Image 1 (cartoon, rainbow, N blue to C red):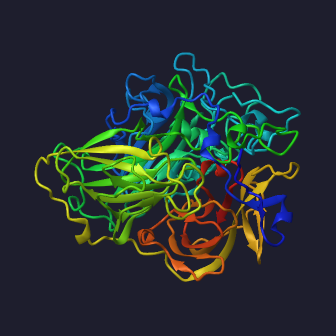
Image 2 (image 1 turned 180 degrees about the vertical axis):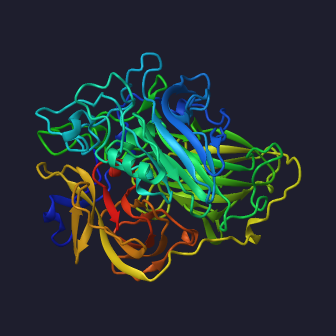
Image 3 (image 1 turned 60 degrees about the horizontal axis):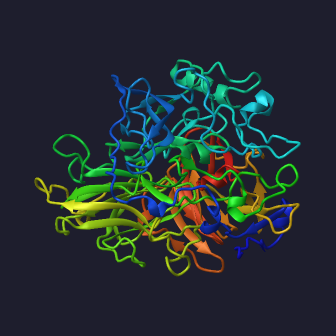
Length: 640
């Protein structure tokens, strides 16, 4: 067996600071599912299921506030094509409204400066008995995680074991984060503000809420009134920010990768205000008042068992064939995988769907909802040819948090996990009957930058290299939207100056401290002490303390061989530039000219962002490769 090494040591004294801190990228897709009891993705029919365009989440409009009660439930969903088994998933839905729970969720539609209040409900209980439901996927209890079984003293901690444990099978903690939201701390979904379902079957001695739950509930009550009922979390989203494509997902400490993989995620589309276009300028609602010409597309990778249920590794051996010794006999977690790549592609909760599009322009709101996979998207008429031959450009008009300064035409579109792209695609040039495929040329392994087919191999053209199909039909009615090359975009201004300070931060990985040539054991954030990278864990003292109203530049030094999508809560920042070792800096990419909340930090480069911190409170920043986030690559920061 040939493995990819992660053994190149950092220069200077960083390695000695906390074990063997290394660079590298060792996840190989062929290894990740070798011997796994998974459904062969080549046997799954493609383009036989219709794309689901998520409808609007039911809510209760008020005089000056829209209210929602949204629960997470467990249910069966036809993710694979009909004729194949259904899949047990979790998903958000309007509590008490039948047929609204789905994975991904129905979309919350919001208006700029009109607040939304959501009561999030942990409904992961059996429908008749009310007993808690265990996780659908294997939970590694040896990480620093929510750990409800540790009680109030041991919650949000790193449990100790005398023998290597099996997966945790207790009640599941959740907490919801509005990704990209400009929220107060109590509504942000802090990872230690999780909560269990309100069930009488919770074992005695278990913590029912996270360390910061009561604090956040009290802050919410002081600001907005009301209390948080058991098994719930309230959030008030002021929507005092530019129009953009936001999304919501679970954020519980050390278990986010599993909770999101099980299904809970959804779009939150913010419209109106000074930094939006007038209705009709972009493709949008059709004659029936729906959204046929504006389509949110959540792209995710998954693997399935032969019975249709989700597969996720239950042993580290799927990653690198390391079969132990595990914790406590070493420092290698028994279940956690440093990255995971599913072998099937899913869009809006269905594998390889088809969507009929008229010969006109469409607005596609793209979200990379994968846990580890970077996407390189293109539109082609041959789904398996590599390199793909793009047949139409993506006209990108917006990014994570608002519009760009000007439209950017791109034949290939790179999206890191959690990044969004607001694009216009013109299907008007294709004759009716044309099949246009959305293909993925990103790798089936960790991404380190570069070009498909040169620095990395394309995703498998037969499976993960295909995403969905658009079938072109004749247009009905006139084309009224503005051609994208003629658009004048209302880009929001960059963060205000002056810059109060510049912080130097670090991205790191660590090999085992007790076993030779085994790693990584975890991924870390940290700070730079001169030329030395200092790794820091989740529970180390807070090192980032912006003042309220301060604008800061964060220099992110990536000391690994992987690209990392870095997400900063609370803010929409400006990407300034990037600088490789020994090279002059280069400006942000043209399609990064708008507000961003997630940025790609490339290997052995410094990525500079500029952000304005205007709300006091406790927030987090982290890598949005969820396997990294869940095992130490997340840090708190406090404003004020």
